[in-house]
Length: 355
Image (cartoon, rainbow, N blue to C red; front, side, top):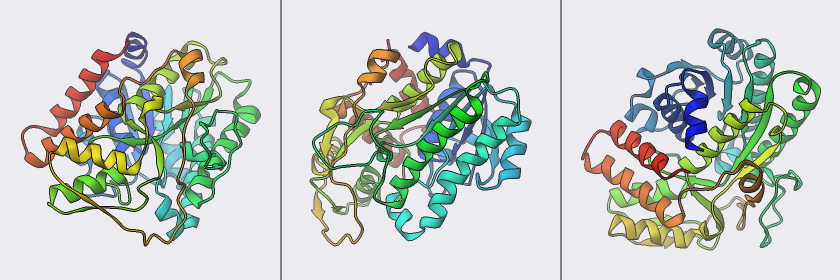
């Protein structure tokens, strides 16, 4: 995997939407480290601090501030970049915000994708397109069952629904417009991603770290809610590996793919919080049962397809994922060294463990 990823992206033009977000920043940093010519298109970071600013990513890639709802602006950016690879990560990513502003959520997560597809159709350079959606794209029956790629799309809340719709749009564009072209198009679905540099609201680990850094109690909403927890580098490695495979064969891998964690990393909220506190070295939590919106209590991903057909497997288990995450934040809050250097070293260490 390591050799294929390294050889595929070095010197190649890559276009990333959402590069100012948590996952997008890590992906852009990784690709830049691999020697790719990266162009990012996204809104300004919506948190302060943000990993994008802390690693000074704008100085290391072609940074474009733009809204994916802006069809003309997005099309011009793609035309100017002439990318060979496109990774679509821009989104309104929060369930809670989707209840507050469903219209914006659907406009961003569905029409934004359509705008990007239309922009790609207008250039001849693109060979690989990976649309990053979510494990929440599936119709969640909240049973003890790990969803496979052919399960029904759905979504109770506006965010989850928008990601299910995104998958349907991807399938439609693949069949209607890209099937007989040289563009390979696939979608990627990850679990609950953790890692250094996420300060988004209403996300468990960022909420934990914020409280711990201020010597406050951690407040959790659903202690028994089960999620597929994984370190950010694991699904990103899946996206990169999928893109590399698609570059070698532009027909075989044009499907949806789950990039979730190992089975032993499917834990409830209370277990994850306990691991964060253990790695931090102090802290405690309280349960707030006043939440007013619906949030799924059970969600798991089956990764057999990616393991068997791609040869992809996660590097970290849950304990390692939490340890890497907490160590990043401790470095940040203790100001013990360069955030950029620490992040690059985590990528290098991760790649050293890849097959």
